[in-house]
Amino acid sequence: MCKELWRSEIGLACSAEKSETSISSPGRLDTMAGKRILILCTSHDQLLGGDPTGLWAEELIAPYNLFTKAGAHVDIISVKGGRIPLDANSLAEGFVTPEVKTFLGAENLKHLVENTKPVSEYKDAAQSYDALYLPGGHGACFDIASDKTCIALVESFWAANKVVSAVCHGPCGLVEAKQPNGDPIVKDKRVCGFTNSEEEAVGKTKKVPFLLEDKLIELGGKYEKVANWEPFTIRDGQLVTGQNPGSSEKLAELVLEALGA
Image (cartoon, rainbow, N blue to C red):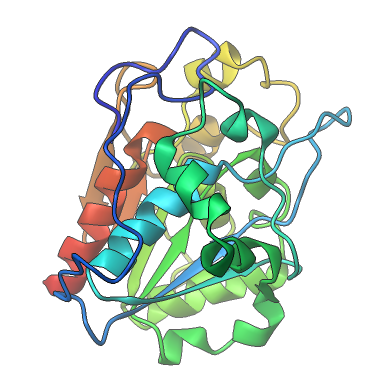
């Protein structure tokens, strides 16, 4: 979790040095042994207008490390399969976290983001996984938000009373998903995600198909937020959401808490 506010008004990454989470077997807690978590990542790499985007690396790697350290089995997939496009800003010097550097520098881990299976092979995943996690990056606004297979996957986890979690732009994957009764999943649920003011701060309000804060409120979600770049997470039953990349670690902790409930 970030220990300070995010660096500058552009809000691209956490400025504080982070202690690196162990990504090897030593130090495993194994409190979640037997639990299975599926992480669904974006495959989209362009904003409206053509600027490059993708997945924000910290939002994938920080939770992955915490999940595996706790002993959970974790699989990383993407919308189309193959290499996950990583937002270059999340890898830029001065912004990239030590944890991300270590992960991408380890061949036995780097391949997890370069050789993913497509979501189409996981249509029945709710039967064998205990939680679904949607990391963000602006790419999620374009594919996870509207892809029918992704929407059906979210709905199946929800209907099975499994944990559904998302951070930053990841909650875009909730906007089209419905409960079995036809209501939006977020209706009457406490929820958070990337705020309008954060989107404005990074200059992308006109480069995404919708503003997540507005959409979640429109769908009847009990939207909550804090100041730009402050870590903020909410757990409302089986739904766990986080406001921004700096919320990634705390979100992962809440997912593990929900799995242990």
